[in-house]
Amino acid sequence: MNRLSNVEFMLLQIIAESKQASGYQINKLIELRGYREWANIGTTSIYAGLQKLKDKRLIRSEDSVHKSGKGPLPSTYVMMEAGIETLRNEIIVSLTSARERDNRFDLGLAALPFIGEDEAVEALRKRQNFLEETLRNLGQKYESQGGYRLPLHVRALFLHPMSLIETEKAFVANLISELTGELEGPAHVD
Image (cartoon, rainbow, N blue to C red):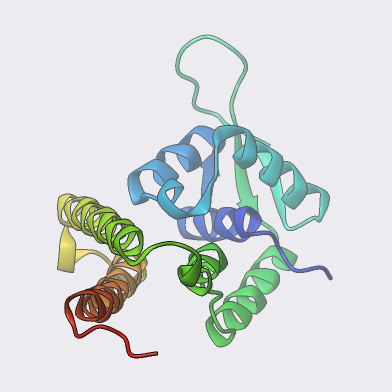
């Protein structure tokens, strides 16, 4: 079977955790946990992903018995046996596979010789500010949801990107130090 997209993988996790969930409930949980920060998932992606999972016979929909407001009865989604097995396999593959770096940032690093050192330092300082703001926002979201009292899988969802950001901040700071050291150091001898 083909591997799941990130959206499908995320949806299976949420449905497995919730036992059953409506599209609205899934959307709210995605918002609450900050998945949109890194997963580029909109409301349309959620419903398209749910349909794909239904087509693959990994989940099924049931009409909800609870209704609030106008409109049709909402559907709730539940895991099927094949969905549970697929989710288990995807988890194992994702935990054992190396995570891809941000290739665009790497391309920018490889192209440093094509801009001035002052421009590079300025751009990297902006990167530092961006990383600090992102880390601050993640930390606030983490704390507002319970911090260390959160279940391990939810804590890990926050702590992993936070530790990666800390490491990148240190890398960028060292790179800036090297660049500014070259700018302030002795003239290059040809």
